[in-house]
Length: 380
Image (cartoon, rainbow, N blue to C red):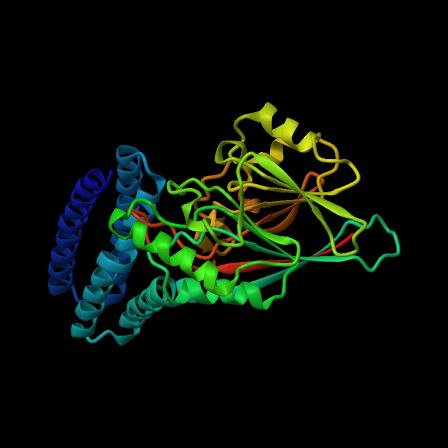
């Protein structure tokens, strides 16, 4: 897959560079023979628009050839922060030589904006860490003081256990949760040179932190967890994959059934097995269903009451644009459910934007979608 990506990427950039060079030469000829800089500015904008349109078409073709939607996002990111600023800078230079400062300003500001977005999305936001707090009342209107604080973590997606990953797990413990639930994708398997060391380091960190909570700490399997469940061997974390566990809560009178799905179940496959697993939970219990991908909730809307569903997988899209939302989620649910705490046809659903990022051929980028820890205070 990596070789195919590099071949496709080389062809993509070769075509764009040749097109960009032709545009740059045409601009120089036009402005050298015609003094009307304002009119030429409009032509520059038109050419830039056509250049970006070509980039989108080529990126879509590259994604189809590589059979990976992340390919398009990576190539477009490289265009936005590579070829495009160079063209904008060249336009600014030509217009400055023609002593047209009013025409230079928009292009210069565009270069500055792109460089600022590049710094934020590649170098700043991926290392942020937000704690998102949500409240959920499942008491049915009863007068009660019973509370359950849940920390939901997802998609560590690490190629190494560094400062960011350590801070995330320590911050999770600092919330003093009653229950910890992790919903998959812990160590990136595509980077084989670092996988074994990252798995060992994660295991050691969980041991050092005594990563546990009064009700327990649990992990479901994700799509990339090829070493499952080695990362959790000998730690307080209990792994669940296609099984459930019944837990006694702090009042000693209430019980919680936590249902951990297989990756296939979470993606909406194995419908019968999924529904049978949920039906076996005692009706009087609090019932929490945790799976890697959020698609499974669509198959549970006609089930008896589910108190909470937890999922990850989407990374929130990693790139979120104003008005448009997440660009790519790899989920069958509407983009509204790319991340956050929402009601899905009667089921409270929390989809974590995750702690890490997609690796391999995907861009290591986050924009308006920072890493997060979900903190859910459940009243029952």
